[in-house]
Image (cartoon, rainbow, N blue to C red):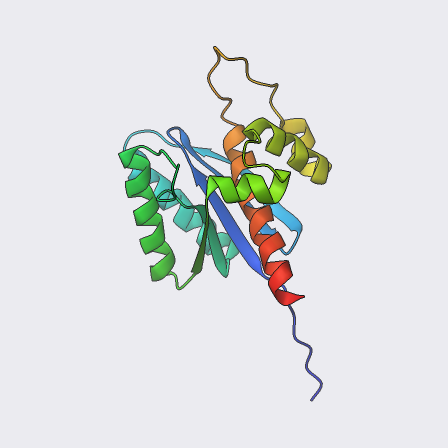
Length: 171
């Protein structure tokens, strides 16, 4: 019997925020879907419910998250609690979890730990012009709140770093 082994890895990256979460589903370096899910009411409960639906829909083998406990990461207690709940959901779904710090994200994508989220978003919009170029918000001015679409770019950044790191392990 002639059997070929596929190195296709489907992964779901989640970037939780105060408003909801951004997500990106990729298979190797091909983007299947990305977006933003807003939540109201019990934000953690509703976020976990929506993340669980995404996991059932796309059946990822890996869940990629930002490491909220990494040095220099300042996240609200609610987001840290949501992070723990998502880790529990991944364990229940038997899905491997990979964590990256914000510094690792910036160094891997931009080559500079001092790079900005907007610089990462511009880079990702260039990498995926069909999926992201039209969704890139204007650059934020100091007195403005961050655009909700940036959450999606955070998730895509996590997914890209996972793909880049996993590609290095295979080669």
